[in-house]
Length: 606
Image (cartoon, rainbow, N blue to C red; front, side, top):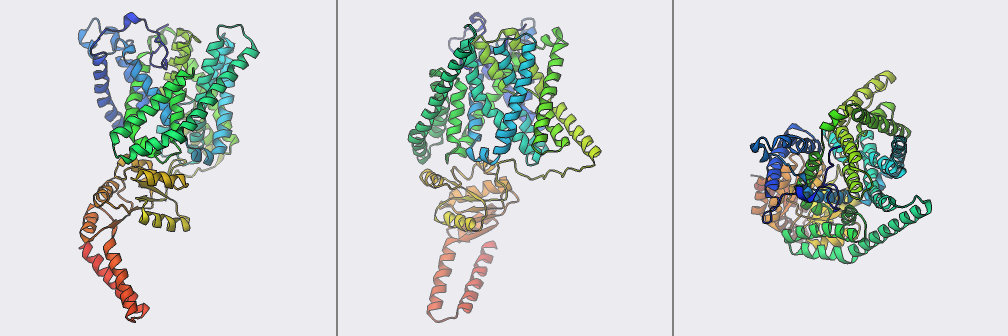
């Protein structure tokens, strides 16, 4: 069989021979790096414009420009050498960083609040799906002659689906807020959590691979691995509370974005290095780092900071996966590969459909969800690559499994459309009509119909308190790290960040808000925030505080719906007290003040 992909070894020795790596002592793999950046610069806009899943796009590109694609003719056609990757191990190290950032972002998204809100589906349906799928797939793998250890590993690995592909599909179809969307999202969350024990399991199985099978020894080895993992998690929690939060707060107060970004990269890679030193997976450390930051006031700012790096490195990871795929193997094995892909979809679709039906969905939605989640997941590349590097599976089986997972990813759009048609047919047969998905509905666990408050100082706190008394949901962004930390520690939905950053506004679901309130002290910051919010949320009313009349006019021109000058309200309140002291009646005083307020506001609008 063809050689396997290298970028998924997670820090283990590369399976490629050293002689295959080109020697560039000064510039390293500069040509490969430049070629990838050029491809990414062209691919990402095109994929977004054509609404093609980026995961599939990068894998397909990797196949095309890899050693099993155009690279086959690079020696005969010298000009092709400049456009291909004849040595995919050249980008292996950078691609492994993409895996770490994938695990970090997953940990960052798995907040305790989100898990608890969907606990029935996450821990009930999600656990049932993973266990049932792993049992059936593992049993078949054992029946085909694989050892019990390998069968267990393949069953657990192939039980997971692709979060990247499925979430983009549901986002494009705007079905995340439907019952099926919530159920599918919850199952994917449990699968993401399951990667951590699966990576631990790979180490346990690899350690026991050369020993005489002994149930007691295997259980003892598993217990030691779990103990090391528990100690690592406890150490991370302790360091996070005692060290990480104060350090992040200090760098945030310095208002140095470059230092803050460097610290986040250090936390991610340092955590991976720490778990690696403990004999655990590097990906586990990155996952724990994200999980640790998920409950802090810096969560959204960290997401915005890491997002560009994650996108590029993830693209590199999936492209390198494509480079290791030899489509010639499909021609050499034209029967078992397609049958394996169909079998994977059949098993997982049946299991997921039964789980969704047991959870209360009708047969149409259950069948649609089963086909949507029937593919293999991107974590298979990580787990199988780690198992290959540890010697748990051989190169031939690794290549076969990677091809099965890759082909299942490419088959997902067709399976999903088949699921939609099957659901419609089942609905028509049952005489049922499923309510249409709300176009502007929010994804599970996201905000919608809330109020976004930019600036949680004295005025922002007053607005938030009045909204809380009337059970109106709100979330606030504060640029003062110390204040944001104190408010977040008190249990308030206050996050650190710059309200003028469009990426942060997307994390706060500002476009789905009922209203936006800007209460910041700095006039320039308030003006930038209004401009950014009006561009990102064209239909959401924006209410802003201004220092004086000129500032109010600038905010109105920038797009604020209404502006309240602080000096005007202070003057009107003083005037009302004076009139009251002079004996003017309450009703007449209120009328005089209201007329003057209207006159001043009309002047501002004019």
